[in-house]
Image 1 (cartoon, one colour):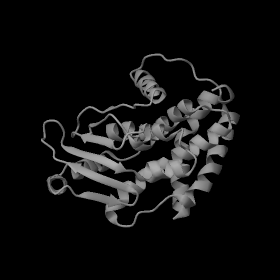
Image 2: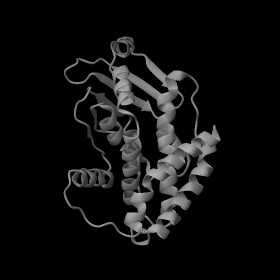
Image 3: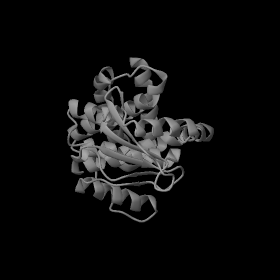
Image 4: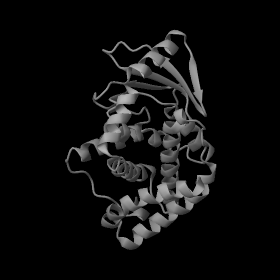
Length: 247
């Protein structure tokens, strides 16, 4: 399992090499990668593994979180600020989801918004059942198919727990913003206005198949970065990147 986690991490690193070298130069990019690699090697044995085929999605989320936490811990030691670190994490995740074949994305979306999942969610919402999967505590809502197709409140989050337990409290609200890239890649149409990492009592997930992704943060500095990246990705100019030591 450990070697599999390392291989996955190296695949993500490989996708970022060209971007990092272009932004920071080959020597600095190598130093950054080494710092992050060292942190991930230390974190990998601590990543929770939730047994069962139904937990595969949550295990994937935990792996993404661990990779981003390693980036935060490694690059912070090199003098980079959290907002700059998350911009790199967001770029890495964008590149990673692009490697997922289109047919697989379609299938995952189809399963998530299937009649079966809808019926299970509706039943649990009616019975007010809370599902617990590892460190995740999931409360289902009744969907009206107009406001949203699938509604979930996370009363507990394994990703948040992992980040907090491993020295990433400052970075936790940024990690939650990874759902922007995931929602847009897999057609979740996720609308979310609050998270546990923002200090709220739950994360409000409202999903509409192929709807627009609208994710915001109640942490002002995180919201500023979300808006900055949104502007950048629309092709508008933003302020130049600083070098690591001056970030």
